[in-house]
Image 1 (cartoon, rainbow, N blue to C red):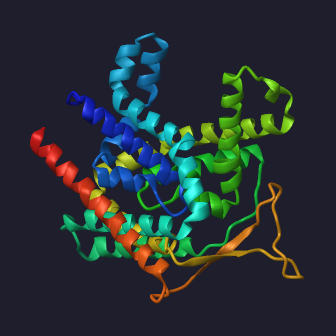
Image 2 (cartoon, rainbow, N blue to C red):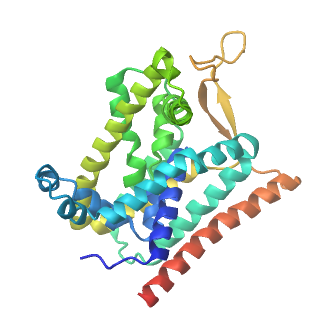
Length: 339
């Protein structure tokens, strides 16, 4: 049985959902890190595990209350509600700051990931030859992924479904950024920008009584792509949670070592000081995709220029990111004392 949640607990759970949804959209940042650091990662995984054959039997037999209790419905509903809200609110704000204050956004997330590494590592007392080996494997994997080059955009529906399964890994695997994987697959703009904006515009039009989108074939195609992507994400979320539930139960020490190594390796993805390298033609001009966006080849990382005020502001934002994780840990400890 799960302990009853107070109104404050419910509000914080929605906020955590907002944080997870926002993190999932940022390339290089994992929503799973939010769950891990905020202390609800295992409950999240085990709740998703409950979406199984027994749950569907309860649902199809009309035993809705039993189904809701069995899948830890209140927890999942509040968390997913927060994630959905983030895609139409916080994510929009984040998009603005990524466009206008990109360095400071990356600096904040860089600090948050440093804080999460500290948070996960500080109480981990199981380092030995075996776990250290797995930790190094996680580290090398994280570093390797950060230096891969993005592919071209692909709107094949089967591939979109696979993108959904793969991208949701960021919610279930701390350190593995689903949005960064989408960049590598070439479909980040299509699935997390264009599709979400198309859905947002459609909902706004429907509320205004405008159904003209039904004759807009491009909009309908984009919404179809989003539907397939969502189906793939839901499939991946449930299947990966079952696999992770088993791994956490039987190989928890090794799993934590891999996560620590992987998150540390992924720091290269969110290094604040970097330039975007675009694909160019023989004349040196950038090549655009079907949406009119420049095609990204990779990122060039460089050291900060400490003679500029902007660099010092970025360093300050790194510390703000670290402090936010410390504050989250403080909240978690105090909640346990008062529970």
